[in-house]
Length: 369
Image 1: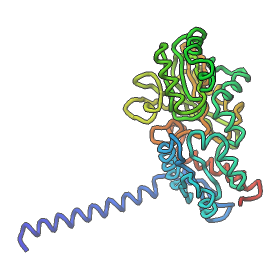
Image 2 (image 1 turned 90 degrees about the vertical axis):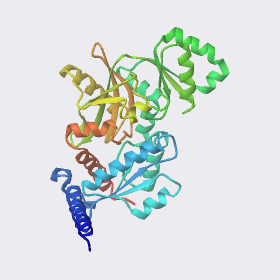
Image 3 (image 1 turned 45 degrees about the vertical axis):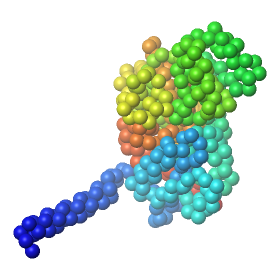
Image 4 (image 1 turned 60 degrees about the vertical axis):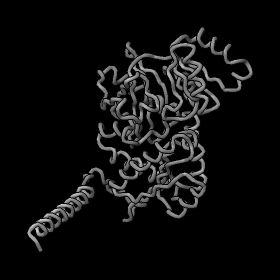
């Protein structure tokens, strides 16, 4: 063997050893990445020694499938760090069969949009006897329908911008031009236009004049049969995530969102180059109280459970306005709930605690199917 060949062999051997060492370090880091606080005592199935099994349902068939899969993957990773056995299951025709096969202790629905947040999936889980993390069917139906949520919030004396909800059939029967002229006369510009159902800000637009209003209506109707036209409130966009524990609901540190174009639409949510997040948000004590008290009140009156995210606008006079409630907040790398969780303590710790809460409910109800 020549000297150069010996040199190449030594280099290859050295590289192989370094790769092996790096792999060992990675495994150790993955194993130890979550400290003891992230591995709650008793995080086992019904008080035994077997780790709790969590089925994370993600995916679905609608517009937010990709976001849901990403949310489900991050949630599953965090729960594994906490010591749970996790099965990530797509929402497909064989969903019930796959759930029966994996016999979960707790199910975590992570389907964004109407098919996962309108209460029907939660109804199905209850029908099958599976305990789950998140809001019950009635609360889902209240919070996910934006016109209903705004009406409930307003009825309880909480601030939300004036809005109208109009189905596509009304525009067809009465004429779009006449209705949009009335919107301009009564509400003025700018206005926010968005589908009455759905999430991830799909179909959301800021309309500053009659022409952009018409375009915004077309865009919003692509995502549903009913559209909300809402008075635009200028101010700071604040997201307040809520979690429940033994003491009841509490607000995580608020997160402020600042975008390059001023509107936190779908692209701004998932294009990391367009948006800045501040967690915790730089708020005075009075501002912090205004946004968290509004969010906690909305969480209660909308009958949300376990966790939620309430989107708020803080205007120039430090008035907080309810904008939207999220039954199943996103869990992606650019999502707001994980940012708030990390600013509070640990995303892993909080999601493990929510699983424990759901597991305790199931145990109190006498087990699961």
